[in-house]
Image 1 (cartoon, rainbow, N blue to C red):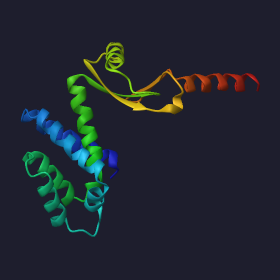
Image 2 (image 1 turned 90 degrees about the horizontal axis):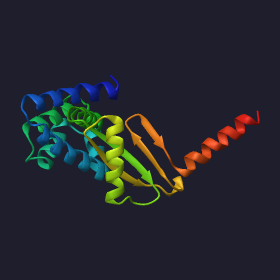
Image 3 (image 1 turned 180 degrees about the horizontal axis):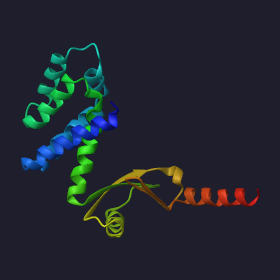
Image 4 (image 1 turned 30 degrees about the horizontal axis):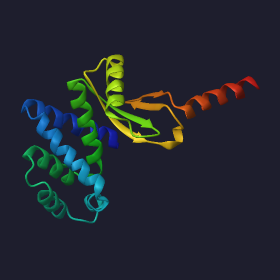
Length: 181
């Protein structure tokens, strides 16, 4: 079974469980911590996905690392270990966040700029694109990328809004090349 299918199944199940028990906020906070732990320490993820390490050892590590977490999150992680789906944990968390954000009318945006955006610039982008996308809130993650030369490049879901200087130069180059053919 593909990683996307697994992520979708478990992400939907966890989201529905959170809705039924009115604990979506708690699950979101806990899953954010799980995501950060797995992203920050590559050794933990390697340990969890190693096929020769027994499931009991993996569960023991998860229990110690997330001992104060809800039983819903811990039981989901334990179930993934039992079913040898540890590699899907990050994708499941991402899918849960996607569903949770959709339910709240929140969109996530990666904004690439040559320098760190100040709060006023972020707020302006949030206001303009929240209206354009018909969402309540737009969460902006600013990524500094000097290769864009100037302007902004924004990725929201599958959409890319490219107002960068490098993007404009590429479009001009394509027009010139196609005109010379």
